[in-house]
Length: 111
Image (cartoon, rainbow, N blue to C red; front, side):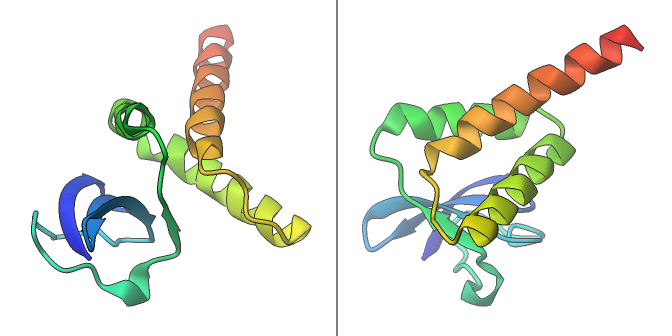
């Protein structure tokens, strides 16, 4: 897997044998550059989105919200998958992160 785009220290857009994937892992993008090979031991989650617009939406979310919002969503998703012993649809990363960001921002305004 080669890095195509670094979304943040924990999230990368990669090319794996011509297939675009998003890989998530703690510190997976730290001090990396485009075209570097991904350290597979740091990969915690890999997903492929059917629709290119979902990649763009996920990228927009990762870049526009604080990393803590993305981290909270990832932790909730990981907990749910482990507790339920299922793999959730990758779209949940977009929907949940967006929902949490809205809730956090609304909470901050009400303080």
